[in-house]
Image (cartoon, rainbow, N blue to C red; front, side):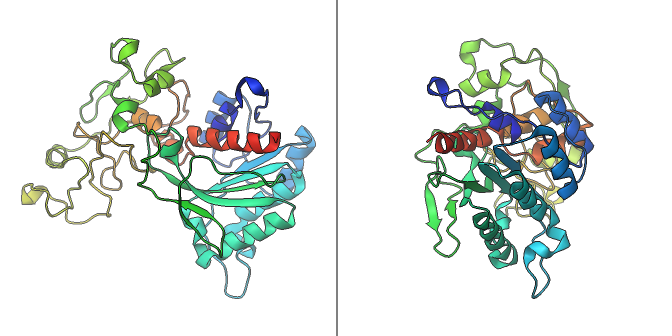
Length: 367
């Protein structure tokens, strides 16, 4: 989120930019990656009022508070959802907004945030935002409409004090009078120029199961898509193009799965002994090369848990392919073990999505 916001700007007409001045996260590998790329050492700590006050005393006035607080969506019968300890990080985020008194805030979460406790927690958050003096804009956005080669839906709550913010690049599926939030259809991209998986990744070397490569394909710049040119800018060498190792029978099984299909689909023909006997609805599925990728989850290197089989190669996506689908430039350096890097990639907000939100917010505040 912070990387994308740092990319946001309104061009030559305005010098408005978004600059990160402080950050906090309890997960040490994510803090290390953040500091390495954004130049800010995060407070490696859980978030509470004491930490918020400490940060504000250090940096002074801030214009924007941004966060993706994990939320389990629980509430005890008869109590407000935000009073449940399991939702304390959402409450801490709102406390940060209250104490910082910014011009705006952005809260990001899973789409399920809109339905937790039959929408009760969303209603409470909106109510709290309004009481703090903000015009609140809840919505579900689709990453592919922001140039991200992935159909990832995320819940976004924008609070600002001008009253003229509008979500960019959305076609409404429904505008619910009761909650007032905008939702977009996951598949309708007809009016948008989307970036496909092939356009995002086909400049990367072919890998077999368990292989890795650290040299880009030797092709002329004119043969690269605009997205690939943007991805490779400033990156002297390829890294994280590492494929998970699969057993030989698993590799054979993947060879029978066509694009857009799963080994669990009854119409996919394969030897009976190779067909999985159980799995999630999106398990053992091969993605389509001529469309944006499906949601990159924290399990995008494990076909038994996610829709992540390469369109043409019998393996799961590499770490670099996952990062490309999330719109991280190749120059962004992830720190940690491969497992920790996979989680950082899969749990991230696509930077190009947050860039688009940041530019819409800058327009609102500039007006």
